[in-house]
Length: 104
Image (cartoon, rainbow, N blue to C red; front, side):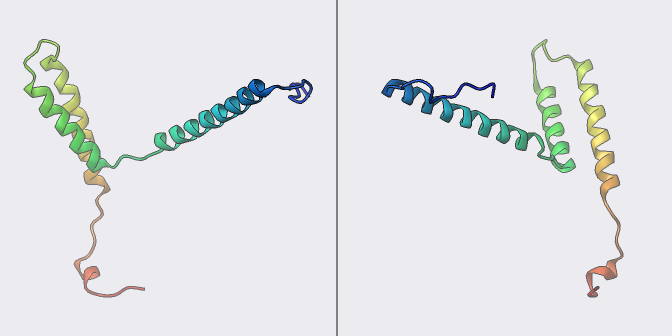
């Protein structure tokens, strides 16, 4: 019983409104936290990753400013190769007859 019991004091209208607003605020904070945790667990496909890296590399190559160093692009190209290799390894070869005959 470490928590303070809210009914110990006689509350006026302002105190009641403040208590309700605080409860609503706390519930919203809890909802936002659970929404964030769901977004963090979203899996990104290898195909989407590959497209995004390719887009980033294209954007990077188009820049004319000194802030984008040509040495840095090699890192992104390296990861694009890694993703492409993972994408290739994830493909499963099947027999063509699997498309024509019904299997149980």
